[in-house]
Amino acid sequence: MPHIAILGAGAVGTALATNWAARGHEITFGVRDADSESARKALNMLGGRARGTHFADAVTAGDVVVLALPWRAVEATLAGVDDFGGRVLIDATNPLEFVDGSLRLAVGHTTSGGERVAEWARGARVVKTLNQIGAERMAEPSALSPKPVMFAAGDDPEAREEALALIADLGFEAQDFGPLAGARLLEPFALTWIHMALVRGELLPVSWTGSGVI
Ligand SMILES: NC(=O)c1ccc[n+]([C@@H]2O[C@H](COP(=O)([O-])OP(=O)(O)OC[C@H]3O[C@@H](n4cnc5c(N)ncnc54)[C@H](OP(=O)(O)O)[C@@H]3O)[C@@H](O)[C@H]2O)c1
Image (tube, rainbow, N blue to C red; front, top):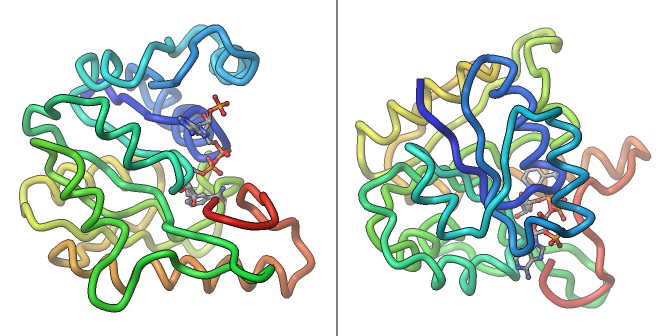
């Protein structure tokens, strides 16, 4: 059973960690400060079933790595990891920014956040997935009916298989979405569920800074 390193201990990181830990996976959070209030809160939520360390050390500890950071933090954080050593890197981020009060993709059309991540993460086999549903539904998707679909796009078929097995383990209906360029469709799709959350009057399920890249 793979040991999972999760870079980011926020809404997405803790929901995924809670779910995978309950299924017996060992979890290591990658954080910028393992003694910060936010990191300690995440570790307390996991009740001793996870540990926290700096990003590069977490990557070394994990068999598989999950990227769960705000887009604005992604490039610099990945630059701090010398080599992913061929590990699968599940990219759950959405490359979002606010411009004039409106949420939009910071990259798209001819590339995607997932493809940028593949350029920045040396030695990683990147799979774009887990960006298509709100964090509040990631801890127990099997409670939903019908079982929610989760697509996974990546250039390495074996990496896709590994990621699909892990997302099926979470309780999703895991679907192979083909090569990583499919992230150009999966990232705008994230705006669809965010839009629905707004239409339904639910809270915006991402960090809001009011301007700039989130
Ligand atoms: N929220 C959702 O419903 C949802 C669903 C699907 C995908 N996503 C995507 O998943 C990613 C994470 O979202 P989230 O909602 O989990 O975010 P979040 O709750 O804001 O958590 C962000 C995490 O990133 C860390 N972080 C923030 N700024 C950083 C920086 N400059 N350098 C290093 N670490 C930094 C935070 O650590 P500190 O506590 O130290 O700041 C925290 O651990 C985003 O790309 C988002 O678009 C979100």
